[in-house]
Image (cartoon, rainbow, N blue to C red; front, side, top):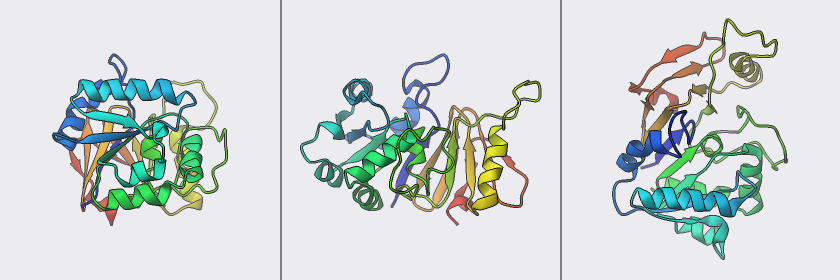
Length: 233
């Protein structure tokens, strides 16, 4: 049974790294899991790995980083659980392709290894990275991602601010542009929100909420805890 915890953000205003989702992570992982951290979204992987390893050990989990493995593909193939951190989504996906990890991770998760992602790590779990907020600082060979779920996510989703003097596109307008060219559901996942996938069931969890965008339909507001299993269909 495929199991995913797709988190919008790793740090919520007023708290520390993974503080807002610690209870969800503990409930999702259970006890005794060894977590393989994927730090490829940031440039300084050593520092990023230290942060994640320390945080997971504080939660009681053994954690190691894939970038320190002698054979990253073997580490992924044998992983007990994955956590892919945030940063730049283009850099993350390019590095996964460069290390021939996309299919390896997909097969391991389809085989039952739990997958957790935040921000960019959530983006790459979806169908494609076409709804990321990041600049394309590097060019992956494809925008196709791990495709662990058949929909897209826009993490850190921001609602339109009617009082804003900013004249650029809102996040909603950018997602609507995506839907003009792609018939693929997009979940605008606000900071503090996350999706938990357990087999054929999807739940919106966390402290905020989300908006569902579909081609030809008005955006739909969803609040936690909500059953969004329709996303898999």
